Length: 170
Image (tube, rainbow, N blue to C red; front, top):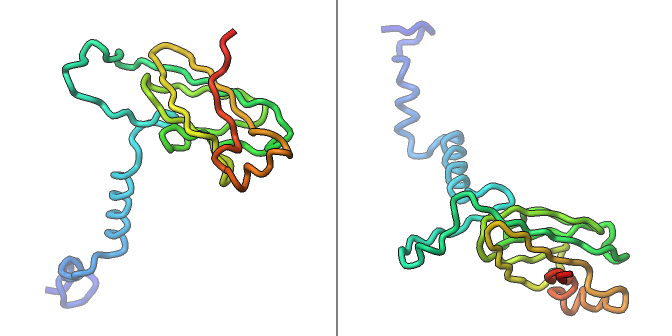
């Protein structure tokens, strides 16, 4: 039987031949690659790192209500060093935002314990563990750790070149 194109081969012979091919098409490889990428991508929304849910029933009374949030307020002081550069805000090693000179940024997170760090190129702040209780606001202050006389930190102690501390109450 001849097909509409005038050839004597069946119309599905091309698709059957492609399916029998041991090498997948570029389209199939691309789809598989995206599926692998999406499987590894974080599922939490931006600014809210995933929280591991503990299914133990021993601490059932300490669970926070569904949808409870806590607020982390990060304030950057004004200083001539790093004035034109933004610090990257890393929560649980995930970039959730940035903070510019003399600005205040707010991050709404699920209650819990988080590791917070700031980064600018190759320099970092020390890691700070922050406990965020439900319905509270935790304030922190950051900025460059010293001026021109402390420039040695940029090369000899890059994890101390930015300070990050809890704000003083009062």
